[in-house]
Image (cartoon, rainbow, N blue to C red; front, side):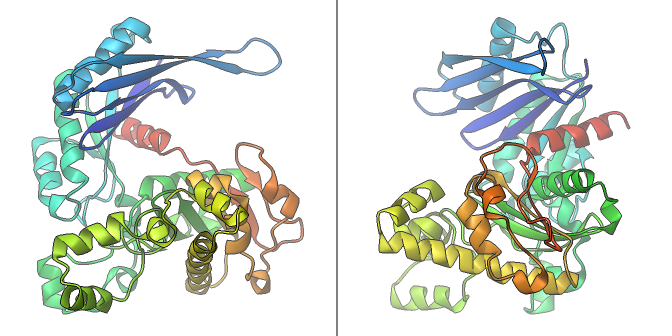
Length: 408
C-alpha cells in the first residue's frame, strides 16, 4: 500500500480522505465539524473494495463521533481515534505523505510545494488575498504536522494551475504601480479541478493533451470556467478572489464596479456590508431566495418567476463566457462540465450551449438527460466539438501531486 492522506481544512471543519496510490482507491474519508463550537462531531467512512463477482464492488461503513472539539489539533485527535477504532489502521499502514489544499498561492507558488516554515510564513502572508481560506488552511497544516510529524506535508494550491495565464489575461487595467504594490491581478481558482478534468478529457478522447483546446466549466455552489490550451490555463473567470466571473450560489460574479460606489453613497453601505452582499447575499440566493440549483429547478417547475429569471441570468453568463473563450482559443475541441451542477443538471448544460451551433456544438438530448455515472459523451456523433460530463476528483488530484513531491 502507498497511502496518502488529503486534508481540506476550513475555519470550523476539515474534510479528509485516505487514498491508496497503488490503485488510487479511497480507503476512508471523513468530516470533522463544529470545531470551536458546541456540539462538535465527526463522521468517518471506511471503504471495503472487493474483486469478487463479475465486477469490482465497494462496500462502506460509516460511524459518527460526538465530542467537544475546541481546536483543529483536537479535531485531528478525533480523526486518528476514528482510524484506530474503525480502520483502516494508520499504525499498520501509516500515510507516506499528507497533502493539503491551500486556496491562495498568489504568484509565489505555481506547483505543489513541500511545506516548510518559510512556506507557512508565505501562506500566512497571502491570507490578505484569501482571508476566509488561507488562515483556515494553515490551521489544518499546523494540526496535521503535530499528528503526523514524521512524513512530508505538501501544499497544493488552487491558484497554481492558472499561473500559466498570459499577462494580457491576468492584468487588470488599473494604475500599474498601485496594482503591483497590492498584488492586484487575476489569479484564478478551482485549479486542481480544472487540471484533473482537462487531463481526464485527454485520456478519454485518446488524444495528446498538448493538442487539445478545451473549455472546462466547474459548476458547483462556487463556479468558474477555464480555457485550456495544450494542458495550460490561458484564461479563467475567477480573478483576484473567487468572486469574479460566473453567477454562483451566493456570489454575484461579474458586476460593474460602480455599483459598489453607488451603494456606498446612496445606501450607506460599508466595505463589510458590500463584502457580505456580494459573497453571501447575491447570486442565485439574491435573485431567487435559494442558492441550490435543485431548488431553482423546483421553483421553475411550479412557475416561480424569480426562479425562472435566476436561471436565465445564470445561463446568460455561461453563454457569454463560452463565446468569449471560443474566440480566445480560436475554436475548441472539447467542452467539459464538472462539479455538482455541471455533472447533475442537464438543463444547465443544454441551455449553456444552445446558441453554439454555429461553432459545430451539438448536444444530444437523450445522452444529456442520461443519469449514467462516470465520464461520458453528451454531444451528437456529428458534433464537431466533443461535449463531455467529467466527474471531478480534487482530492485524488491533490494526492497525485502530493505523491509526486514526496517521491522527489
